[in-house]
Image (cartoon, rainbow, N blue to C red; front, side):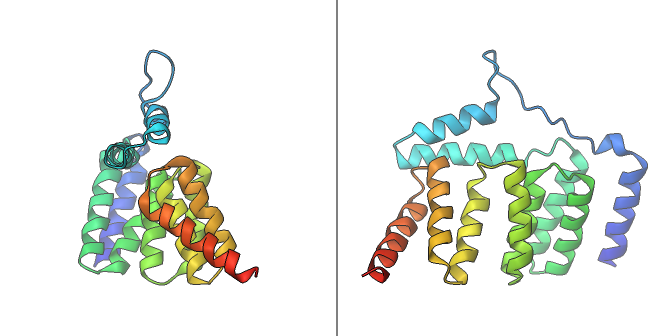
Length: 191
């Protein structure tokens, strides 16, 4: 039933492509800097952990804005399905989102997260790579990449990925701890 529903939604959306068209340009401030770029600049400079977390939350909110009410609704449906552990239903919605809005990084990121939750690490990594092509500063996707590397005990690539997270979000405590732990482990292996 869920596949039929997803197919009907997809057919409806295909009949009216302008309804799902995204505005690829972010809101621009007078200086010509997008809101998202300004938030990332603020995140990189912020040295207070709580303030950095608030900025990161604003960035996450920006990422969720697809520019399409239909895509936003499908993202809500996928989140509800994930919450209810109906992963096949969530995957159907996320597959449709990536087809209908291929430049919407958060659709790919949500699907990467779902694949990770399902233990499909190769598929998760493929989606993460797509996210990072669209938004190289996506600290969530970079953290997911690092987690997959750690799962396979690939310490050096995991360390590199966590360092990339810190280049974007220096005050992310979990990434700081991971970098310290991995660096210590790698130093110990070199002895």
